[in-house]
Image (cartoon, rainbow, N blue to C red; front, side, top):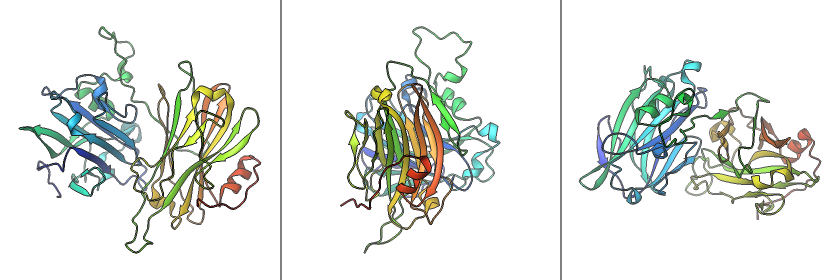
Length: 386
């Protein structure tokens, strides 16, 4: 059902996905999705009720943010306490004022509601032509006489993510300096995010505790469609990495050859699996054991088109690197060489105990060429997944 602004409809069950689609690839817009769990007062109970890239789930496990190329939330309505009467879904432009950007650049953006693993049931695309705002409430899930419904809202909001979050009662870290927090002093929500957009751009992260904890590297992309009798435009995009340990050992972690690595033992890098179908909403994930960061010298993360026609612009790929108490690092595959099947994305190095990330985004023929460019020195032979 295609909803008009102000329209509402019952949702298809308790297990839902609420996702956004927006055209950012050709328009150089960095947009973010966020959700807010609201009581009858229209405010959050605490900062934990803001769900977004830096806080991907609530305490009760009722809603989870999936770091896709666009925004996606997985929701179990049965797990929300009675005091939560509304879940509001918003879209904002990152650093909109600095870039002089508005939502008009996202014309065609839409929010969609579907049963988990089911087809879209509801969709709303607000009119964004001429929009001067940098944030918008696209839609909301709300209770009415014990039943959950979805309403198409389309309400613009001046400013960006920070003022929008404050309007729902969130204490934002950006304004915490110089103010006296009320007792007890809960840590304010950190809205910081680092997007590596220029070739060779780097960022270094200092350890804030005993270790960096679990470092997660997620790859997500637009998969295309599978043909009824095979073929189609579906793309099997694989996440992998070259690694070098502090003791000089080198190798690769990838689905090709079933070299999935190990989290608890060297190389302390593990690939979660291989999504060949494109049906897994979380994409592909690799985890690095930050407790053993001293044992790792460097990691070169890459994506490989194993099956499907090389069309990097169509994939709209994005890699998100996250770890506890650190801002997420985002790298988008904005360029493309359609005659190259592999993209070296980001180099992660142990820089005197810090985690140093450098944007690569270099499209090459295969893993061997990336190896040669980075001076890894491995010996390569042809391989298959099966």
